[in-house]
Every structure is written in C-alpha cells, then in structure tokens.
Length: 175
Image (cartoon, rainbow, N blue to C red; front, side, top):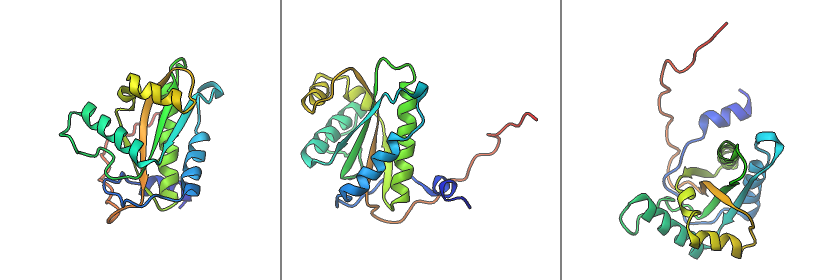
C-alpha cells in the first residue's frame, strides 16, 4: 500500500501523552509539512505558532478549558507537551479551509514520525481575546489572525487506538 495512504488510514487522535518533549527537529518537520499544505490562490495565509514553553502551554490550556466550560484543572490538550497553534489571516476568504489543510498535514507528519497528535478546537475564541492578541504581538506577529486549531503533539502514552468502523453510505458515484 502507498505509504501516504497507509498513514492516512492508521493515524488516530491521541488522548494521552507522555510529558517528554519531542525533539525540536521532529517538531520542525511537522511544521514544515504544514507549510506545504494546499492553500487557496497560493496565498500561504496561514501561520503556525509552536508553543513548547510549559508555562505558556499551561496558560493556553487553562484558557481553552475555561472556553470549553470544563472544571478548572482539566487539560484539553491531554498532556501533550507541544502545541502547534494554526492561525489564518482574517482577510483571506479561504482561511478556515487553508488552516484545516495545514492541521491535516501536521497530524499526518506527526504520525509518520511516530508521534501522536490531536486537533483541539477553541483557538478561534482564544485568539479573539486581548490576552492572546497581545501574546501574538509580543512574539512579533503582526496583522489580524483567526485561530483555526491546536495540533497537540507528543509521545503516545499507551497503545494506538483502533480505528472506528467506517460508516456505510458515504460515497456516491456518478458514472
């Protein structure tokens, strides 16, 4: 079987991570895969903010938890030590699609490197707040950005989950 298709079929969302940080080179490869995602009109209007600083990661987790409505102390990132935040230019009409493709590429890249990943939502709500807009400004990100998602990445703690049975009736041919 083709290795890319095999990775697509085998990749799973991971909900339990070891605390050890993946190597920076692995994270760079994952981010690079995201940079090569298809994008509308070739605008490349998506950026990734790689968060490996535990203090910042934990602040982001706490805010994500609050937005999600969970009890304080719940970690929506399932213990993943690296969070790759995908943001897209608010002025780009294809921003959500482009950012989604970046997320998909990064999750497949993580899997291909033997790492686990999961897409965590609520980046849109986080990066609409003054706190996280100021954070972007402080790290040198100019412009108006919409949060698309968080690619939480790390070493899998436990076994790779089994694939759910694929639902029937989801393909229609017109020949």
